[in-house]
Image (cartoon, rainbow, N blue to C red; front, side):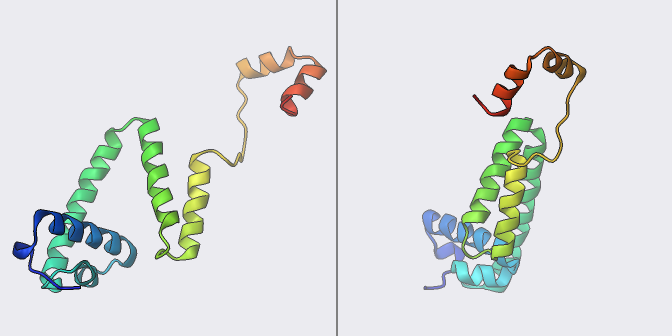
Length: 138
C-alpha cells in the first residue's frame, strides 16, 4: 500500500481511507495505527485529527440516536451488532457477547412474562383445550 498525503488523494480515495480508519479504529482503538493501515502518509497527525472527527461524528450519531423512535433505535442496534458479529477481526468473545445482546434486543430470550389484568381476564375465559392449542401452537 502506498501511503499518501490527504491533499494527494482523490475524493474517492479519501472517503475510502477514512472509512478504513473508522473500521480499524473501532477494532483497535489506536488512532496512529489505524491511520497507517488506512494509508495516510503522516499517521500520527492524521490519526489524531481523524480520531477527533470520529469522536464528533459519534456524538452527532448519539444525538441522532436519541431522536429516533424506539423501533428505529432497535433497527440501528440490530445493524450495529450484526456488523460486529460478522467482523472476523473482532475477538470471538466480543462477537458472542454482541450476539447475546442482539438476541435480547430481538426478545429471543424471555426472562419473565408480564401479564396484565386485561390479559389475565382474557386467559381465564379460555377453556382447557383452547389453552393447550395456544401452548402447543396448534
